Length: 563
Image (cartoon, rainbow, N blue to C red; front, top):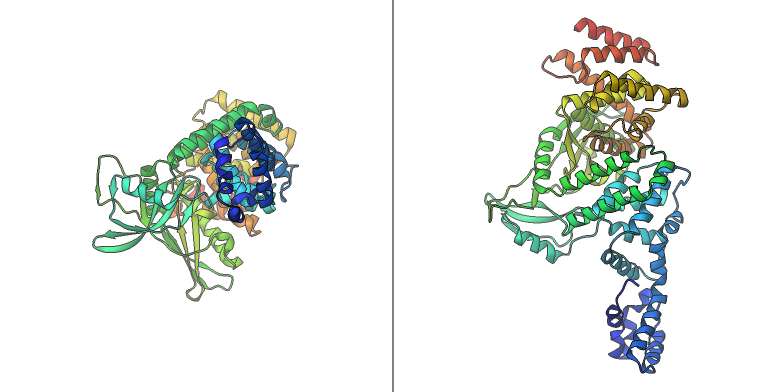
């Protein structure tokens, strides 16, 4: 029984006031009619022993609450009743097992919160309503894992929609606690007021609109802060994640993860993400970097050959006017950028295609060829699209830079080699990239990797680039500190064209970006292209074997002449 006896007695207390108030009591939430309450009270009055009264009361409520407890105890069955799950896919089976395990291992207080909210849903709850309550009461670790799992092809329909709750519909912090957090913070920003309704609430932080005085002027700002107790919740989530790997090793092996240590490594990366995203000062620094590299304006052509201005904007940061103590501020105050829609809510398909293309171009251009910076959490809940059709303008507002990384030049080179090698099914390029990423380029390590890759090629023929990347992760060949960030970030960006039926767009833009940067290296000798001269020779040989022989031969002939 989740609720203590005193909780149940408190629920029955209104009956002692007057029968006229029976219609006001909340028992209708668990399908208890007023006449049942009167009958229960008469039964209790006829029992002499207080212990027997309590036992009767507890038994009665246990029967009424049992359906809710059963939903939690048999979550797997609940999940299977939701439309849109393809249980023929191993990754989906893994996701269902993980959710069932997670909610079976959360603490008693969290279970009580979930039960309380389910009671407010009412006795005729649906599987969808149950999952909404569960997801809104999840911790940050589950949120980050399931945001990614929800993008799997087997999670479609209603299930995919429900899992979108994890992106930006977290449980909000009460306003009195928001005011307390601001009042007790070490930073004095001159905040005059805070809106009661949040602008957005995620799994880790919340954002409220506020007003502050800055240089004698009242300004609208977005006030971001960590949800109370989130660090503890993050640690609890990671504990459950790690325990799942240990307890479900057989299931993981059946799902195709031949080296279970790989899952443990990925969980470690989620743990690092949580630590970084709960570090307010680090997030502020990431956003300042994003402001420098992501803010831009580009002109593109529409299908009617109209010129459309696409502007990407990152909110600027406000620093505290003074510090009350030496302790750094835990508030993240930034420029308030109002309006806009989620990508999926934009009604014009051509606008969606332009947005998807420019977001992918910007992200991969910076990550692989320019500064190396990448926001690994740029899902649809973390940017907004504003369309001004009469002016042929599109504004993109980018938010939330807690999960950000920077690739070194060697890491850029490694990712490019693996990506091109996976695309061309080239064992040589895969070996070069994987050994570089692992920082072990010894002949012995390269031979070991090549033997594994060539064996796989003989067994399973030609794989897609995505399948090769997944295989290298499962074999524990492609593990680096930046792997989780790059894999997560790129998969989130890939979802943009996929959701509008433009699956080929992702690959096309990547090729365009690579070609643009290659041309830039010809024109600007100060521009550093990550691949070395001998990498081009290997890529050229592999590409000649593929479908684009004449184009690539001419490209690399030009490169050799230029060199």
